Image 1 (cartoon, rainbow, N blue to C red):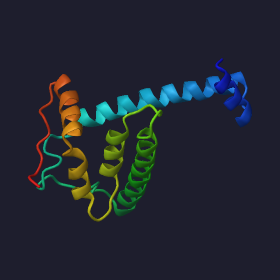
Image 2: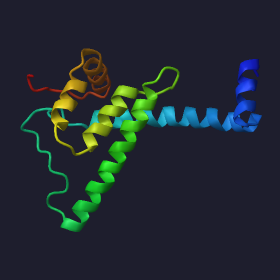
Image 3: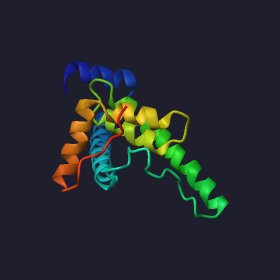
Image 4: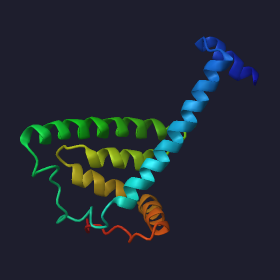
Length: 146
């Protein structure tokens, strides 16, 4: 092990096994974030970012199920935004901006559409999304004009 890594592990009170678990956790979360991001981006309707795309979540469900689903959906969205912010930091593996975008898509708050469009209309982000969609024979996303 490198000296600086040994010193860091000792400072944090980690054994060699603890460091292995942290590395393993990091690799697993990296892979899961990429797989989840790809699945969501491929399944996303190409008109999701158009104004006429419906936004109601479980509108036809019983109100108790609808509210429970909304709470769970928003909790998952908040977690994804936090994980995306962490993955955006230097040295942390993962698809930061795309994970933030997925989290924002799950959250319900005023100004959400504007923020979604701002994130997805960044040229690098849109190119990356459409490249992923193209690999799975999905049409590119269609955005509203800003």
